[in-house]
Length: 162
Image (tube, rainbow, N blue to C red; front, side):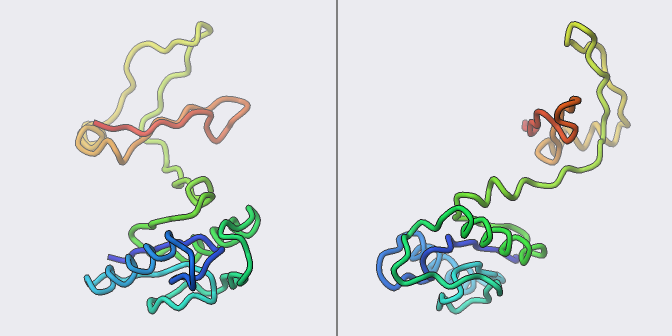
């Protein structure tokens, strides 16, 4: 499995002194490689963890605070995710990463009727038997996205589950 690990940008991996998260990421990266996984680490450029790393990250300054400022972390997150398009899973330890990397929306599978003036919908939507079977068997692969005039990309998004 190809696994992407994203460390916060403020401290190298492994850390030269304090850095609990960075210590865990270092041991995790090394252990995953020993277990036979391909690991891609996004960390400060002056990190020494002996696994393949994302290029183009900034060095962590020696006297910098452990938590990087928002712009620094967001730049690091954008660089990291851009380099991790081919991984199977990303293990992100940043604060902004999960907010930045919302999964892309898939194409509509079943279109529901627009609610009436009372805001309610009634009846059933039509879908092929294969689509219905797949939704029932793999609900986590599907979500509901409600669009409106103000939020054309979706006002509410809800993941299906069993």
